[in-house]
Length: 150
Image (tube, rainbow, N blue to C red; front, side, top):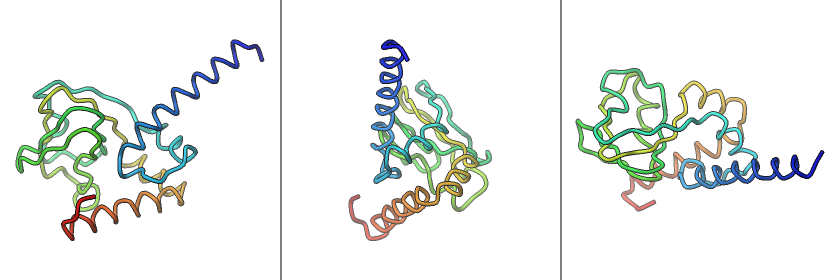
């Protein structure tokens, strides 16, 4: 392997680790190793929305989990807003098959998204990763129920 190939491989690795840093900013992935994050990273894709653009509409199937990288998204029916480093409407994955709300970008917004199917398959294949994610979700819910900041 040439020096050029080694440097290219190292730079590619650094770019991935930068993305892992981005994933670590979301509470749902707290405590995951780089190895575990590499599985998660493979399944996410990035998308940008302009202010006023709809991410999804009420009544549409729940297909994607969104992580807000930057910007702000509002659920029209409730007025609830989600901002940078927040997971958008995660609860919909657990209690409904269709979106109960319409989500609209308030400002120019960048998200990372993963399909519900890919997310479920990942958790089935990588059980320790799934346990960590589930623990993070339970911790977040406990804080919400007891009205404590997370």
